[in-house]
Picture 1 (cartoon, rainbow, N blue to C red):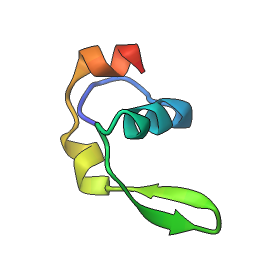
Picture 2: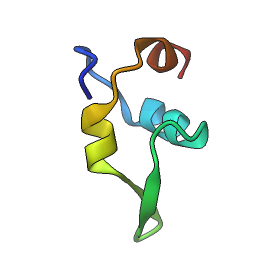
Picture 3: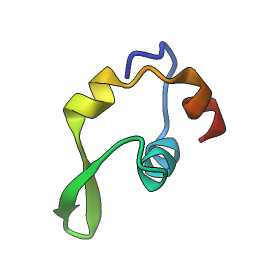
Length: 50
């Protein structure tokens, strides 16, 4: 993520729940997220809300 701060897994889950980061599948009951979307993410306001 290009936001300049560490982001924990719960925040990623919340961003996916609000459709800001796409979930691309599952691996052993764990969600997988679009790595390219994570790299392009820059919305600090949405990050702070999550």
